[in-house]
Length: 67
Image (cartoon, rainbow, N blue to C red; front, side, top):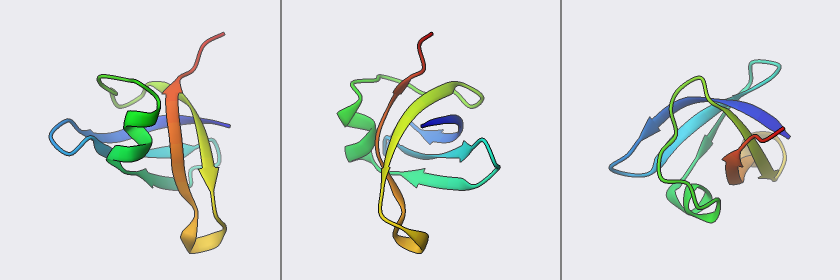
């Protein structure tokens, strides 16, 4: 799945993304660390994996979108 980086706090390594339909999803440091990234900038396209449904839906992995 693809998303756009919306927020990122380098101190906590947590932030949020916007899905293509505008739905925001938050990610924690564990999801950020799983992708091996060092930084995420707002507006950057990302590839993400999610788990759960409804209110329990969360990002479990994110990395740069490559073509």
